[in-house]
Image (cartoon, rainbow, N blue to C red; front, side, top):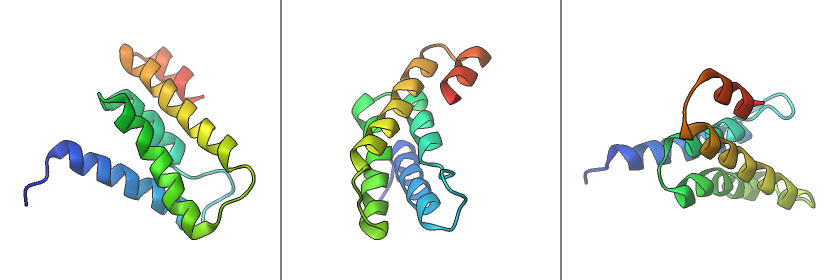
Length: 101
């Protein structure tokens, strides 16, 4: 079975995001936001880039457990992707710094 580079990147980003939530880490220091920002900036399809952090959050929340703030956190993950869309339109230092803040 031959896997395209794009599919491999999507799978790797999703696995990285899930693992970053499951391994021990400091509070509020998982890589899901960074994965969402990168997916928004680098992947052409908006639905695919939006689904990567949301899917990663769903998978890891099944293992960790859901809570009452999940919808707010999922929406904030979507905002990372939207920031990536904005930053990916024209990549320069100012946009990357603004999107990462």
